[in-house]
Image (cartoon, rainbow, N blue to C red; front, side, top):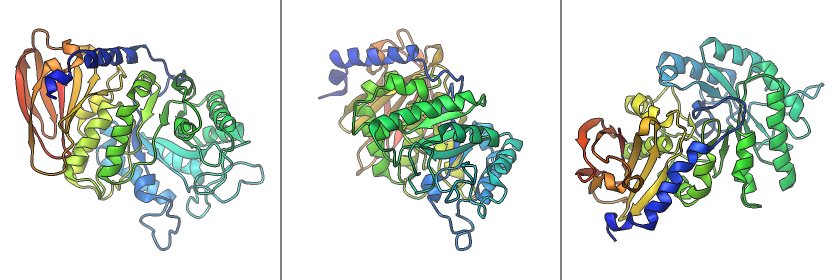
Amino acid sequence: MGLQSLLSGACLTFILGLAVVPLQVRGLNNGLALTPPMGWLHWERFLCETDCQKEPWRCISEQLFMQMADMMVFQGWLDAGYQYVCIDDCWLAPERDANNRLQADPIRFPGGIKKLADYVHGRGLLLGIYQDVGKKTCAGFPGSKDFYDLDAQTFADWGVDLLKFDGCYYGTLDELEDGYRRMSVALNRTGRNIVLSCEWPLYARPLTKVNYTEVAEYCNSWRNFADVSDSWSSVKAILDWTAILQNSLVPAAGPGAWNDPDMLVIGNFGLSWDQQVTQMALWCIMAAPLLMSNDLRDISAESKALLQNKEVIAINQDPLGAQGYRILMDSNFELWEKPLSASSLAVSITNRMEQGGPRRIEFSATMLWKGNVCKKKCYITQLLPTRQEYGYLNMTAKLPLWVNPTGTILLRID
């Protein structure tokens, strides 16, 4: 089946319906995360390394996060929009203190989280932290169950700006869902602006149909799928899963409420250059939180430039807040589109072949949004993998493009 025939009729009717829905979404009413959060998160790259004697460069410690904060400021990450320095699991001491308050490991965080928050804030950044809805975190440290109000106030007292709230050891489905609701209310009650990043749908989905309208009432973002790993197979699985469930996911997303496909692993070891381009392009199309998990002290200039590309980031941060969606998968080509403000559109074209060389596709505006773009003419700019201005094209013009295996071309149409 050819590209044009596949994009006719019922398929495009479905696409148009998706394109309109995100404009009506209302997220968690805390006024936060009106565009997807951007920052750095330790988990994928640094995991739960707690032995600072053997692994001083990699252990989860005050030093690691201070160094990353410095890198974010002095290497241009903050200027590009990356604000949050986020702690994941394994920061905790094994037990709560005598007053049942959480406490950081005293050896690895000798100044406590308040000192780290002050350090991060002093550089114009924001601090994220990790906890769990259940009795224990996924790594076995004290969880928040039975202490939601106390923990929320503790985070506020420390100066935390984002909470990643995991879902291990939660008990029953009712306890899981009630825990997320209670922590959301508790955070708002503190009076401090704290973004809530949930994993509610990830844990609830095997047990029930997820009510995304309700999730968006309590969470600023939420995970749907298993942890990303530093591999092309992992990135592919997340993209495929998201596309399959886009009828449920896309309408739920919007300012203050985002589907989170997990961390950017660009700048690590497992993705080729083309695959790094694909992850960046598609995470921006999906209006995903852009939370890197890499070592900012040791990252290639090429990966850094990709992650700091302000025109690409602008696709992700577009104030309309619409999540993009897949409109075509045919002959191992995959097209996604994302409505932007001022009636613009972002389009990604991915070559899903994993062998051979670059493949040609003849791109036409008739493929997009039921032909409702470029009625007269529009201006097309290629942003990735390299920048190129194609200029004005009309609706019937065809633009030949060559896409590398596992690579992506990202276009902006104005």
